[in-house]
Length: 225
Image (cartoon, rainbow, N blue to C red; front, side, top):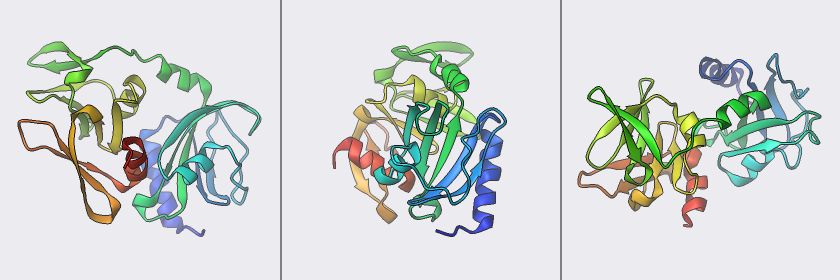
């Protein structure tokens, strides 16, 4: 698939602002890589036109139609690495995925983030341990992470990316670039435009959370519908 250069370059510019410089970036369609930017610390020696290997995170994301993250041994590309791959359907790039390739030392730093049965929320100049079962959803707005319960909201120092690692994946799900939801707090799932969904949350207030096209297939499989 031929992707417009401006689409790739615009995407890479955005990613370069938010990803650590040690992360390599690859874009692939269902048969081959169409873009690759190695980092100075990890290079899989991929070239545009190289086939996407069976078993790779990129191929798994393309087959699954949703985000995939996993540690890869050195048998595929000669070096171990951690990768996160997601389809680009939401951006109008059908049958394409973007993969962030992370050196093991950086993945290890992320994996050492604390995992408790609570998150720390800040409100009114105090820090409060919030039990996970009380959290309805978490969002990110203007670079600030916010935790919402049915009664209140708090700020948290971690990014959504970090919280994805810290929170139990059978309970907390990324459904949008700006939202993580507690699936135990979902009351209804409503269809929305272009195969997306709206989540009606169990709340005294009327709260609806979007499921974007990028996460829709993965969310549907996870929830079993």
